[in-house]
Length: 70
Image (cartoon, rainbow, N blue to C red; front, top):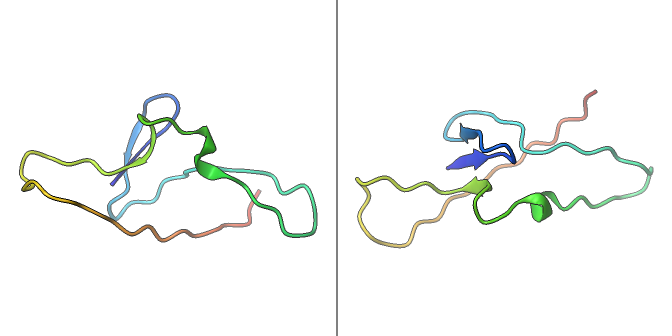
């Protein structure tokens, strides 16, 4: 699993942390933020397959952690 940012930088997400997105919460009530709206088909979180995998259907699970920081 990899993350490719808008500048084309690739981050390996397997057992590594990467900042995927950031936003400012502008109200005290619940607020949604659509993280993947800024991604195209060639960037964002992607599954990268190498030549060693057999043909087939592959899936993965992502665990999100929200950090309230400055």
